[in-house]
Image (cartoon, rainbow, N blue to C red; front, side, top):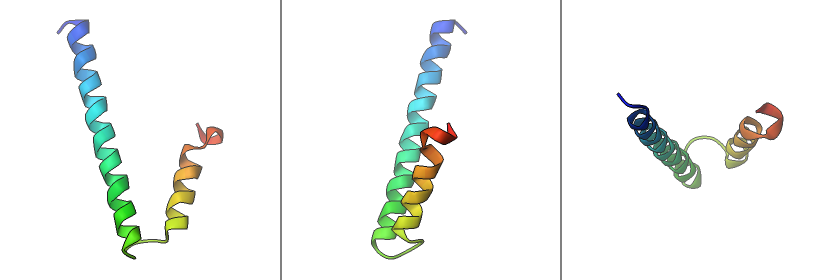
Length: 56
């Protein structure tokens, strides 16, 4: 497989992963909005902690 094709395949995989993550976040957000699952403050605090510059 050529390096160009590997790059294309890798980019497609990244794009698909991003779509899946976005959908999971939206699904969790919808659950929180209707009172299912955990408290929205807990959810967003966890996201902030996970993606803060200090933890990267």
